[in-house]
Image (cartoon, rainbow, N blue to C red; front, side, top):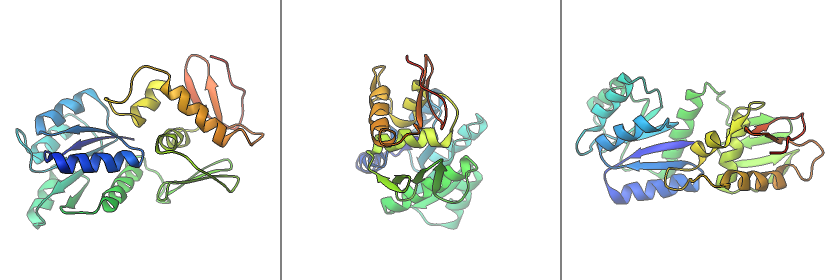
Length: 230
């Protein structure tokens, strides 16, 4: 999932960005309210983490502006103040949830998972199932036919994209947009490389293959159909 992190304190931003990326999120960082608005014009983010106290344009104003633009990405507001009025103003501005500083990274991750489930109208269970494949989005454990599968953060993120939209072809660009940030992604064969890794771990030992290539289009998760050579 692609996340916009809007936090003007460089050390906090770097810490959160690193922690989120270790969990498989693709993170773009903005340090002012205006930068946040500019980023949101260019990219369709899955989630936005937005500090209230920002230079140039404050977080509440940014939040209102995004909602006026019909941007429906879930927004988690960060505030250094626990006053009821601040929380109410944040929610009234269009935020979906708030988190008071200081907080633990694990709590932030839990809030983001909850917002993602709500945004996709997914069931409250953290378990994603497809055929004999099981993904626990809380623990990030993956099993196929009850056999544990060890995945890297990027492999997990790509697989989650496919599992959330089974039997639909996802282009390389769609996959990359949710897994890599602007700085990391380039137009090389990086998606193909990670798909090969996933196939080796998920499909090689099983008669039924789940990850399929669609010629000239991309990849899809399916229990039927043969790959079409690109």
